[in-house]
Image (cartoon, rainbow, N blue to C red; front, side, top):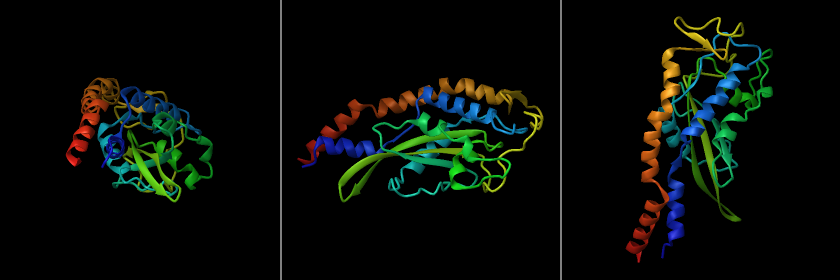
Length: 233
């Protein structure tokens, strides 16, 4: 007989998790800070916004659940979309640790470091990239020692360079090469549309998040599991 615990575990593994509104804001804040402090300074760095469209794409991407000891390859799900990934063995995904604790020392602008260790940093400071969205998937892994669980996390970026072989931004005075009609904020180029998106994101996305949370809250999941147990008796 299938137990409630097994059914709940199955449902838990199927559903991807996305950042809360507060976490979305924190993700944007740390990206803004990282991009503002690049050395040498960037002349054409765009201000980044959070994208629920990329977040939805990320939920599909993380559902592939690669084994925790396997390199996910940082393969992009679509052309023109950058990606950073990580696996986490903790009970809950930590989006802030994953998306914000990147080592800027892994990249040297002067010699244009292009090794795998600097991949995440280069993706995050690509000047033309102005949107990010993240998701996590709880995955099951079976080995000789038994079954274990881990989180597979990913953030998608758009637009992204076809390759990361070149420099991620143009050095120079901050905001000296902004597109026409853009202004400067924290050493980054922005338009009124950009700031409007960042200010209104929490309001608009809170409704979506609350709707999703109400559908996948623990009580309905428990009721679903109990119903399935009744069916298989």
